Length: 239
Length: 393
Image (cartoon, rainbow over all chains, first blue to last red; front, side):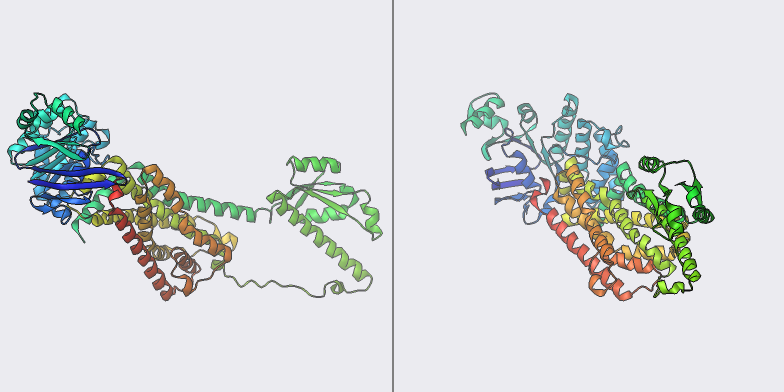
C-alpha cells in the first residue's frame, strides 16, 4: 500500500506540488490523471525517492521514503518517464543488470529473466543490442527490468508513451495480471481512455493539487456526467 | 566492498568494451599513437643531428678563381664547390627561392686585398629564418674561421711571433653528464605522454557513466534500484580506473618496444628502459590513476550532456600537464617539498628512474600518499555531487 500525505514540493520559484494526498491499495491500479505539468511525475519521483518532498509524508508499506529510501526502493518496481536502456547491452543483459542491483543471486535471476522474456514476448530482442530497439521495444524491456525482482509495488510514469496499439493492449494485459497477483500499481497518464480502461481508482491532479479522487463510478456519480473526459475537463477548469 | 560496486563496475567494463570510441582511446590512441609519435620525433632529431657532420655539402661558390687555396681547403673538408652561379644577384635570388641553402661569394678584389694583407672579404648568402640553412652556415663559417686561423698562425710565425699571443687563454669544455643523463632531456617528455594516455584511457568511460547515462535516460531507472548512490558512483569510478590502468600499462609497453627501435646511442644517449623500469613506471603512476578517474568523474557529473562533458574534460586533460611544463621550463630538481604535487612528483620520480639513479623511497612514499589522498578527496566530492537532487537535471 502506498500513502501520500500532504506532500508539497517546490523547484525554485515553481510550486510543483502544493498539497497532494491519496492512497493506493494493493491489488488495485491507481491512475494519476492530469494535464502536462500538473505534478504527476514529481509525485512519482518523490515516491521512488529521487526527489525529497519539502513537507508532507509518503510511505510504501509504512516505510517512509525520506527516512529509509533504500528500504522503500526495495519494494518498488519503477518505469520512469522515457526510461532509457544501455545501448551496448542486449535485452537480457539489461534486465539481468537490474536484477543483480536488486541483490538477486545468479541462480534466482536466470529463471526469472527467462520467464520475463517469455511473458513480455521479448524473445526476438533478448540477444540484440538495445541501441537498435524501437521506442515500444525499449519500453517493454524497461518494464521487464522493473519487474525482475517481483516487486510488490509498481510505479509507471506514462507507460504507454510511444507504444502502438498492440503494445498498449499487451501492456494493459500484463498490468491486469500483476494486479491479480496483488501488486499495488500506480500509473500516471494524461490520456483519458487509458485510465478508464485500466484503473480501479483515479486521482486527478491539476496545478499541484488533487482536485478529485475515487473510483470511475464514484467520480461519475459525483459529477453527474458520463464520460471521464468531461469530469477531467471540468475539474481542471474549476481550479 | 559492496557487491553492487562490483556489479556496476563489471557492467561498465563490459558495456564500454563494446563501444568503439572507448576502445579507440584506451587501446589505440594512448598505447600506439604516443610511442609511435615519440619514436618518429627522436628518429628525425637523430637524423638531423647526424646529417651534415660527415656528409658532403654542395655549395655554389662564386669567384672560385679568386681564391683557389681557400676552395681547395673547403673541398678537403667535405664541401663540394659548384660553379653554377655567376653573380651576387643570382645568388640572392636562388637562396630566396630556396634553390640553395647557402652560397659563398668571393669578390674580384679578394686576391689583391688578401696579398696586401688588407681587408679581404668573402660573403655568405643564406636565409637565417631557415633552420637547416643556419646549420649549414654555421658549418661553413666554422671551416672559414679554421682556415683564417691557420693563415694567421702562418703569417705570425713568418714574422717570428708566437700565434699564442693572439689567444691569451683557451676554454676547454668538460661535460659531466652521462649518456643516460643526456637522454633525460628527450625522455622528459615521456611522462607527459604517459599521463595523457592514462587519462585518455578513462576519458570516455568517465563521461559515458555520468553525463552519458543521464542523457540516455538510464540514470533515473538506475537510481530507483536499492543501491546507495555512493556505491553506484564508486562502481563507475572503479571501471574508469580499470580502463586507465589498462591504457597506462599498454602505453608503457608501447614505449618499451618503441625505444628499443630508437637509435638513442647515436645521439650519445642511452636509455635504460627495460621491463623492470617499465614495471616501476607503472607502479609510480598507479596512484595517479584513481585521482585522474575521480577528477574526470567529478567534472563529468557537473555537465548536462555528453558534448558538454567532452568540452570540459578536454580542458581537464591539460591540468595535470601544467606542473610538467613548469618543471621542464624551470629545470626543477626532485625535492621533498615538491613530492606532494600529483603529476609533478610522478614526473620527477620517473625522470630519476630513467637517469638510472636510485629511487628515493621517501619521495615515493610522499608522492603516493598525497596523490592517493587527493584522489580520495576528489572521489568524495564527486559522490557528494552525485547525491544531489539536481543530478537528474
